[in-house]
Length: 162
Image 1 (cartoon, helix red, strand yellow):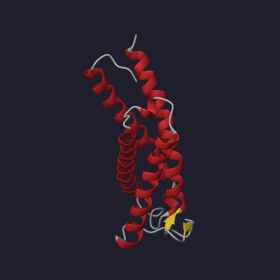
Image 2 (tube, one colour):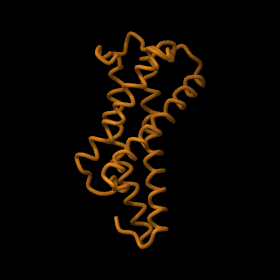
Image 3 (cartoon, rainbow, N blue to C red):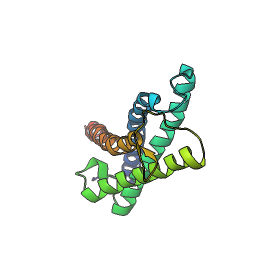
Image 4 (cartoon, helix red, strand yellow):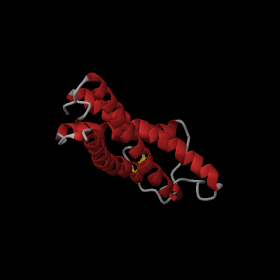
């Protein structure tokens, strides 16, 4: 990415981070709401309680996303990797960090922290104790986030250049 000056580069970095976080938030909120039946006590809870719980989980998901993105950017020394052609290593680091944090957090939340439990509908991977849906979430949504984020960011850059 070539920018005219440091101010434009800083502005673009902030815009990209906000786009990634925002797109991630939207996608993860939809996913969280769709998995409600796979957690105990959620289907019988009041609507706004479910929305509040899913919103809190989604903030965490979006924060994990930006953290995973930042890790990949730090390793590659390219904050704007999402706006260019992705290297396999950037994408793998990005997804791997999200998956690792998810496995650790799900283990803590379902075992050590007793924060929530999976319902009988949730398939679980025995060696991690992690539900299949949270793992699928952190396999597919990061890629979709990058696709949409790249599209939005390149559009923003094109509008700024006019």
